[in-house]
Structure formats: structure tokens, C-alpha cells
Image 1: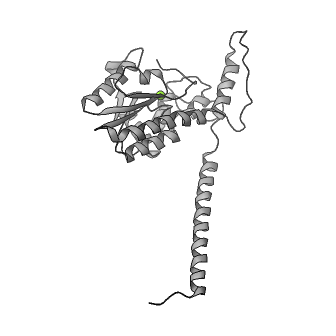
Image 2: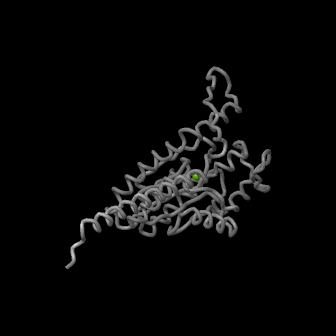
Image 3: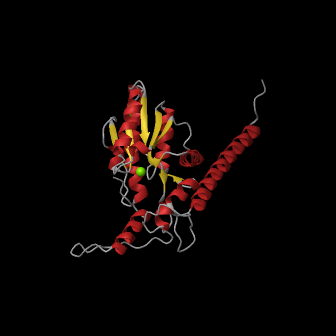
Length: 261
Ligand SMILES: [Mg+2]
């Protein structure tokens, strides 16, 4: 056997270190480019200053909106991540102890972010019409959904992937209306941002029309349970995502931007 000489092994070591440094630099560059290309959320460049609301006077809607934008630009991502860390800890702990474990995720403001549309519409919910992001225009909610352009809420995507790795079956339950266009766009959006390998997407059907989405969501979880799954975690941004049982633990994400009964 030929032993390496001191000089050849030294060169090999140097080459190996250089390769590691170059790989690390490339990864940092990719991460930096990703952050730069994604850019800050709409309305956060520059971020507005903090707003104080005078509790002694009636709420001023304009000031309240500024306060919400300030929150979105500062604490929102951190608080979302904190809630999802708890969900992930629970899924990690529980997955191996259940025969058919399942994770239920809501979509809007849980798995996908509609912040771009919300900000464009100045917190108004505009159902119909085109989705136009030019200054002073509005983005119709249906057109926005069909554009399949919402970004992933990253800590939810991380939870999704961690659950899959632990053989937890993932279901989406959304209040978005069932229909071929809506379904195609929602599935396309989920898959384009990395939600790949889920079991089923439940969308609200006409029979569940009514003031609250909670009966539909409860029915969908009951349907999952009837297939022998144990829903170990149910994650949503509205209480109507979480009411009605059929889940071991519920995880509420912050959403002060709108309310769904
Ligand atoms: Mg939601």
C-alpha cells in the first residue's frame, strides 16, 4: 500500500477545507439571494412607526390600520413561528404513539399568506373584480385565489414537512368554496410553494353555506376520524377552524387582520 506523502496529504486537506468553505459560501449566497428576492412584506419598506390608540376616545379606523401594518412588519412573523413551534413540538412528541396520526391545517393565514392582497385592499374584503396590484387599484379575492400566487407561511411548511417525515398524514380543511376553478388554483398554489404529499383537501360545499364555517370544518374532521385517523394537531388562525372537537390539540395562530365566524 502506498502511504500518502506529507505534502500530498497536506494538499488534500487544504483542498477539502477549501471545498467546505466554498460550499458554505454558496449556501449563504443562495440564502441571501432568497431573502433579497423575496423582499419585505408589502407595506414594510419602510416599515411604519408604532401607533398609539387613545383608549379614552372611539377607535380611529385609520390609526388602527396603521397599527396593524406596524404589527405585520414587526412582531407577526415571530408570533406565528412561536405558535407553530408549539405545534411542531407536540407533533414530534405524539406522532410515534398513535396508530394513524393526522395533522389538520387550515389554508388562509395558516398555510398560505394573503398579506399582499390584504394590504392592497387596505384591509377591505373585495370579493369580485380583477386582482390589480398597481397603485390605487384593488385585488378581488376570487381573482387573487385563482392566481395561485399566495406565499407559504414558512413555519407551517416546516411543520408540514416534519409531520410527513414522521409518517403523519396531512389534511387541509379550508373555508374556500368547492368548485373546479377554486380547487385547481388552491391545489396549484399549495404545490407551487412546497406543500407536496398531503392526503386530501376539504373545501366548503354549498350544503354548508351559513353564517359560520365551523360546522363544515367540524364535519370534515369527523370524516377524517371516521377513516381511523387520530387528529393529533389542528392548526388554524380563526377559532372557527378549531371549535367542534375531533383533535387532540388545537393551535391558534395570530390573525388580527380579519375575522371568520
Ligand atoms: Mg384561515
